[in-house]
Length: 320
Image (cartoon, rainbow, N blue to C red; front, side, top):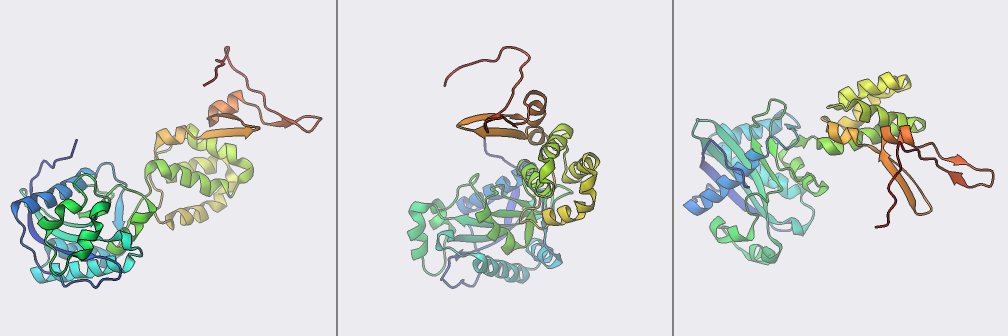
């Protein structure tokens, strides 16, 4: 079901331009939109706003990046246009692939409660219509190309400012693929890793430093079910004191990632799995259960290896 904002937004300023590798960027102008195009843009803004509670927090890289969005949101018409032109140029500069061609749109919306919002989106061209948009010359009319672009609800590259969450400055699309990073760089924001993926990022950063204690690391994270990287590291240092001097290094590494892990999904943390495999056979399960029920692989006198699994009751035995 498509999200619909409870607070209606009216588009007050909007500009757009085609962005395509190898093509010069047109000079942006304030655009007039008909009712159909206006509704199309509002639905995209509503879609972004609806992602606020499920999209990882995003913050500006620096003061200059925040200042751009402040001008989009509250600056004069001239400042709005100049800032949009700057952002469109930055976006084009970050694009490396002609398949990334699309329409850059900057909009200012005023809600019925008086709050102003600034949105920057990059609308992707739907594959069958790529040639049509590339052949467009001069002014690109949004209504004419609307059907060639992302529909609301499918947006992968967008930023809405401000974010209603205190821990985040900007709402961004929740498509966390590496290919979307060029958009984040262009608009000057850094998005946290998703809480689910953050568990794996933390686990990898720690286990590489204490490979001999891999199972202890997994057991500490899964057993405590922490909700943040900081709390997880507190528990890890308690369980593995030798990790204490490495903590600043681990935190610096995680902060430096393209999408830093901050919040953790406690359900994903509790489901970290241990996997023992060999000869086409795989024994796998949650770390805590594996520790309680599965012995460590032991070498036999003839050079083969053995794993002993203990069950409380008769296990099922089937072929599928």
